[in-house]
Length: 147
Length: 435
Ligand SMILES: Cc1cc2nc3c(=O)[nH]c(=O)nc-3n(C[C@H](O)[C@H](O)[C@H](O)COP(=O)(O)OP(=O)(O)OC[C@H]3O[C@@H](n4cnc5c(N)ncnc54)[C@H](O)[C@@H]3O)c2cc1C
Image 1 (spheres, rainbow over the protein chains, first blue to last red):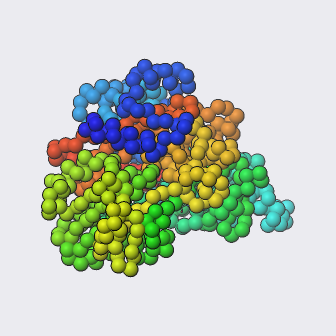
Image 2: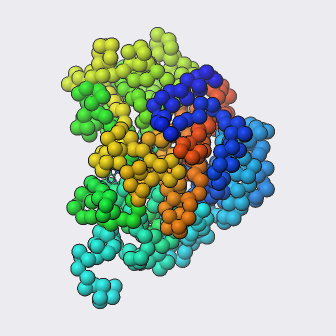
Image 3: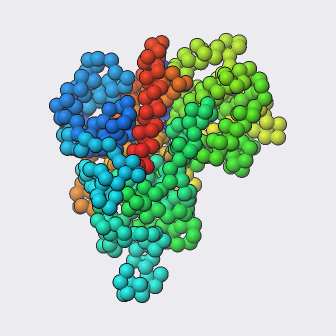
């Protein structure tokens, strides 16, 4: 499995890499490497990190009708505890242990703040006109805002 | 409109607002999003996953900017999920969205036309109709195009006719499905799987698996052959594990055969009249249904507009996805030369980086640090799914990638729930982009 993964990665490097945009050869960056990168550049914001979860958890984490749980309006400490448990592999999960291992404490806390600030309400379907996310005229509010 | 405004000629209006404002309807109907000539005009080319995500997230971040989306088709059909059309577990209807929500909820002016050229100096986008749309920032997400002649004798005309690639979901998907359903008992299906970077790396093998599932019920003596132009592919151990269990993969009676490039798998020539694919080693494979997935390159528009700078893919500035050709133009999605898989989730998350960069420019500040995740869930059958988790961490002039692939398992619960997760992901993702 390991050897095959390595082969796969090599193949990807061969077809995608270009000067200046290089794939890390190792599957996991060490904490020291991540810290070194994060020391050079400002940490991605809670919104940048959190919005990249939307494909699975819904816009602004507000998908309440699916198996993958909603994140909008989630209790801050609950989010932090869960993500750290996923990161450590405390218990088996379907995919979250493979997702959470990359985040630092500070990144997990920034996402926790972001999701805790959002209304715990289903993202409105097109036919819905009354929603915490919508203005009275049906247009979208700037909830979550810019960075 | 006031009388002074209505006295302006159409030309003047185009100059002041861009053709977008003239062509659009109900532009001034949004109480809190009335477009003023002072607010920046962001024009997006391509209403697929990258373009639609840009429009939606831009409006979420900013109430005032004018947003115009240029897309030739009245509807968009998602590729994710389209392989399941082949075993009847998904419908194209379910995967298809119009732009009404973009217009009404997000105040996006959607122009149904093709972009044909960019005048970088004048900051104008030329449309197929001949009109020019002025922009402050242009975002291009026009997806991939295909290198048809990598298989000699194959062409765009064939793809639109009797030999669909079905690598852009829609009419071609339906055509290929109909051909498979009409295949004679014991018939042969052959696929040519490409090398190089192409959209959704596991999708050819997912497609073959969905077809095999369908045929196991309706045409159990049929054979499926994958002629591959490469030697390794994503989730290979998962596919082979499942195919071995269910389809005798690796035995004399295998239903699915995979021929690697090193074993002569590369298809080099099509003999359309005799429904035959010819491989690099000269072998002729006659089939009842042929599905050639050609190698990819950047969209015709990106190449014609010079964004690809004579290359196969479009380069960009790592932090912002600004084109290296012009900093007022952003480039994302399948057409860019990124160290990332060509997936919808990647395109949608690149869109969020672009939105941050545009809003930062409008507000006169440095854009925040990007972070791009790609969590891909694929299936082999209704009861076998697998996941790949990539994260792309910005490191100055490059991205560092971390990747984990789920382990092969015989645990039926884990297999099944991963497959359910894939369906779950597809539904949530469609809503994320178009609702
Ligand atoms: C079978 C299959 C399965 C897939 N499964 C998954 C999956 O499970 N998960 C996943 O994340 N991804 C998946 N993908 C990949 C995903 O579909 C693409 O990565 C994604 O669509 C890329 O988005 P894009 O915006 O770059 O291109 P597209 O979504 O293709 O959008 C491009 C748009 O630009 C428009 N356009 C083109 N030229 C012009 C022009 N000149 N002017 C104006 N508009 C123009 C097109 O009409 C189109 O609407 C799959 C792909 C396939 C083929």
